[in-house]
Length: 112
Length: 113
Image (cartoon, rainbow over all chains, first blue to last red; front, side):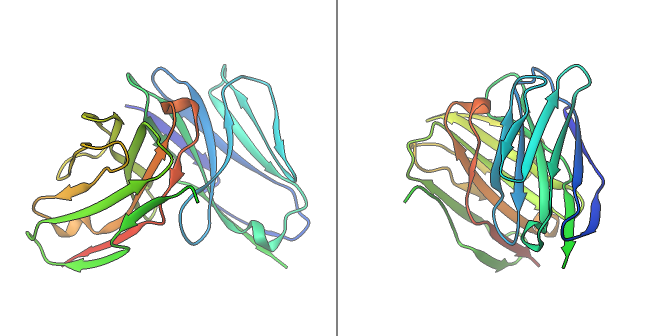
């Protein structure tokens, strides 16, 4: 059975702090690792990672994948209150395209 | 505007009364999925579809049915809903399976009494 585990489950920081969110995965026929941000409604896409060691960046957010250790991290630097959300990672794999397994999510709260 | 549209957004119903949640996308995506989200459990995939008339079970398919008769639509059917199906449901679509990110609808909150 495919499994994705995120840590920590929740995190409280102050504006300006840097945070690192962790995601480990065991996914059959692994294809990609995806990160999403979920505020009040639907998850919104952040990154998709398919190759080990290649950092993807978008503003203050960055992410990297380690396919040997089956691990990914999401970094957020200089956090802002608008970064408060649930961050979800998901592994894509399975015997046919379309199977996606999500972790439980990390609840990030950024205080002013 | 590219979007995934779910209806209804909210529904309160009773045990055993068949219901359908519709999902439609306007991006010509081949892949569509249904998820349920419960506190502490994250998003769990119910069913997914790779194209018209091609569907497969996700991690929690019991108690649900789907059909994909047209590319743009992927309804979720609860033939005999039970209280343990009370949840927040999301439909999503994407191009080319696992190599493209999924676009999510705004969610349907179902309460089954």
